[in-house]
Image (cartoon, rainbow, N blue to C red; front, top):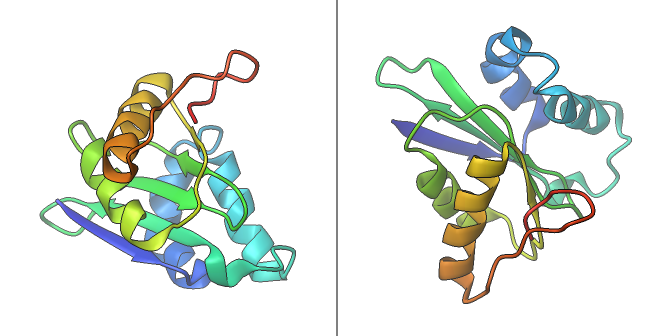
Length: 131
Protein backbone atom coordinates (compact mmCIF):
# COMPACT_ATOMS: atom_id res chain seq x y z
CA UNK A 1 0.00 0.00 0.00
CA UNK A 2 1.24 3.48 -0.94
CA UNK A 3 -0.31 6.78 0.14
CA UNK A 4 0.06 9.98 -1.84
CA UNK A 5 -0.99 13.47 -0.80
CA UNK A 6 -1.26 16.55 -2.97
CA UNK A 7 -2.63 20.07 -2.94
CA UNK A 8 -3.18 19.86 -6.71
CA UNK A 9 -6.88 19.16 -7.35
CA UNK A 10 -6.37 18.57 -11.08
CA UNK A 11 -3.63 16.01 -10.44
CA UNK A 12 -5.78 14.30 -7.81
CA UNK A 13 -8.80 14.17 -10.13
CA UNK A 14 -6.71 12.69 -12.91
CA UNK A 15 -5.36 9.97 -10.62
CA UNK A 16 -8.61 9.12 -8.83
CA UNK A 17 -11.50 9.87 -11.18
CA UNK A 18 -12.20 6.25 -12.17
CA UNK A 19 -12.21 5.22 -8.50
CA UNK A 20 -14.45 8.11 -7.45
CA UNK A 21 -16.98 7.37 -10.19
CA UNK A 22 -17.38 3.74 -9.08
CA UNK A 23 -19.36 5.03 -6.09
CA UNK A 24 -20.42 8.58 -6.98
CA UNK A 25 -22.86 8.99 -4.11
CA UNK A 26 -20.28 8.11 -1.46
CA UNK A 27 -17.73 10.40 -3.07
CA UNK A 28 -19.99 13.40 -3.75
CA UNK A 29 -18.25 15.53 -1.13
CA UNK A 30 -14.83 14.79 -2.60
CA UNK A 31 -15.86 15.32 -6.24
CA UNK A 32 -17.56 18.58 -5.25
CA UNK A 33 -14.41 19.62 -3.40
CA UNK A 34 -12.34 18.93 -6.51
CA UNK A 35 -14.77 20.97 -8.64
CA UNK A 36 -14.68 23.85 -6.14
CA UNK A 37 -10.90 23.94 -6.34
CA UNK A 38 -10.77 23.74 -10.13
CA UNK A 39 -13.36 26.49 -10.64
CA UNK A 40 -11.87 28.81 -8.01
CA UNK A 41 -14.81 28.55 -5.60
CA UNK A 42 -12.40 27.30 -2.89
CA UNK A 43 -10.60 30.56 -2.20
CA UNK A 44 -7.89 29.32 0.17
CA UNK A 45 -7.08 26.17 -1.77
CA UNK A 46 -3.40 26.22 -0.81
CA UNK A 47 -4.42 24.76 2.57
CA UNK A 48 -6.45 21.90 1.11
CA UNK A 49 -5.05 18.39 0.76
CA UNK A 50 -6.13 15.38 -1.25
CA UNK A 51 -5.04 11.86 -0.39
CA UNK A 52 -5.09 8.67 -2.43
CA UNK A 53 -4.31 5.13 -1.35
CA UNK A 54 -2.76 2.82 -3.96
CA UNK A 55 -2.32 -0.94 -3.93
CA UNK A 56 0.85 -2.72 -5.03
CA UNK A 57 0.06 -2.33 -8.75
CA UNK A 58 -0.61 1.45 -8.33
CA UNK A 59 -4.40 1.08 -8.58
CA UNK A 60 -6.29 3.66 -6.48
CA UNK A 61 -8.10 1.84 -3.67
CA UNK A 62 -9.00 4.70 -1.33
CA UNK A 63 -9.38 8.47 -1.04
CA UNK A 64 -9.69 11.25 1.53
CA UNK A 65 -9.73 15.03 1.44
CA UNK A 66 -9.25 18.05 3.66
CA UNK A 67 -10.74 21.24 2.22
CA UNK A 68 -9.18 24.33 3.73
CA UNK A 69 -11.04 25.48 6.83
CA UNK A 70 -12.89 22.17 7.19
CA UNK A 71 -12.31 18.75 8.67
CA UNK A 72 -11.15 15.59 6.94
CA UNK A 73 -13.60 13.74 4.71
CA UNK A 74 -12.94 10.02 4.26
CA UNK A 75 -14.07 8.35 1.07
CA UNK A 76 -13.91 4.61 0.60
CA UNK A 77 -10.76 3.22 2.20
CA UNK A 78 -9.32 -0.29 2.11
CA UNK A 79 -9.35 -2.37 5.28
CA UNK A 80 -6.40 -1.71 7.52
CA UNK A 81 -5.49 1.65 5.97
CA UNK A 82 -7.19 4.16 8.27
CA UNK A 83 -4.30 4.60 10.73
CA UNK A 84 -1.85 5.14 7.86
CA UNK A 85 -4.26 7.65 6.28
CA UNK A 86 -4.45 9.53 9.60
CA UNK A 87 -0.64 9.53 9.84
CA UNK A 88 -0.29 10.87 6.28
CA UNK A 89 -2.93 13.57 6.81
CA UNK A 90 -1.29 14.60 10.09
CA UNK A 91 1.85 15.47 8.12
CA UNK A 92 0.07 17.82 5.69
CA UNK A 93 -3.20 18.99 7.27
CA UNK A 94 -2.98 21.24 10.31
CA UNK A 95 -5.68 22.70 12.52
CA UNK A 96 -8.16 19.93 11.75
CA UNK A 97 -11.02 19.65 14.24
CA UNK A 98 -13.18 16.90 12.77
CA UNK A 99 -13.52 13.94 10.47
CA UNK A 100 -16.49 12.66 8.49
CA UNK A 101 -17.01 9.33 6.82
CA UNK A 102 -18.32 5.88 7.53
CA UNK A 103 -18.62 5.79 11.32
CA UNK A 104 -16.15 2.94 11.87
CA UNK A 105 -13.49 4.58 9.69
CA UNK A 106 -14.15 8.05 11.15
CA UNK A 107 -13.92 6.71 14.70
CA UNK A 108 -10.67 4.85 14.01
CA UNK A 109 -9.26 7.92 12.26
CA UNK A 110 -10.22 10.20 15.18
CA UNK A 111 -8.68 7.84 17.71
CA UNK A 112 -5.41 7.76 15.76
CA UNK A 113 -5.51 11.53 15.22
CA UNK A 114 -6.06 12.00 18.94
CA UNK A 115 -3.01 9.89 19.76
CA UNK A 116 -0.92 11.87 17.30
CA UNK A 117 -2.07 15.23 18.66
CA UNK A 118 -2.74 14.50 22.33
CA UNK A 119 -6.50 15.01 21.97
CA UNK A 120 -9.54 13.01 22.97
CA UNK A 121 -11.97 12.25 20.13
CA UNK A 122 -15.72 12.52 20.63
CA UNK A 123 -18.83 11.72 18.58
CA UNK A 124 -21.02 14.69 17.84
CA UNK A 125 -24.62 13.69 18.69
CA UNK A 126 -26.07 16.26 16.29
CA UNK A 127 -24.42 15.35 13.03
CA UNK A 128 -22.73 12.00 13.66
CA UNK A 129 -19.26 13.33 12.91
CA UNK A 130 -16.23 12.55 15.00
CA UNK A 131 -14.23 15.53 16.25
